[in-house]
Image (cartoon, rainbow, N blue to C red; front, top):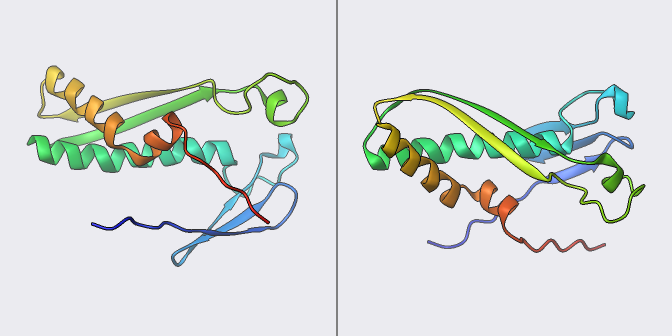
Length: 143
C-alpha cells in the first residue's frame, strides 16, 4: 500500500484564532478568554490531547477486533503539564510542550486483564498520533 498524504489548510483569523479546513469540514482553534482568545474552539495543545484520544479509540477498536474481543464501553482521560513560559519565550531552557502525557482508559470488555495489557501495548505501538508525539518527526516550515 502506498503512503497516505494527509493535508489541512488553515487561515489565521486573529492573533489567537485559526480556522482549519480538512476534507469538507472546518474547525476553529482558539485560546480561552483568560489567555487573550475568544474561546471559539479548543486551543492547539488541547487538540493534541483530543487527537491522541481519537487515535487511541480508533486503533483500540481495530486491535480489539484483531484480538477477538468486544469493547462495550471505553472512556479516556488524558492530561499533561507544560510550562507556558517556554512557548511564550519568557524562560530559556524550558520545553514549550508537554513534559509528559498521561492516558487513563476505563474499558468494559470481554477481555481478561492480561489481554487488555497486551491490547494497550499494541495501541501505543500502532497509534499514529502516539508515534508522532513520542518519536522525533521532522517538521519543515517554509515561506
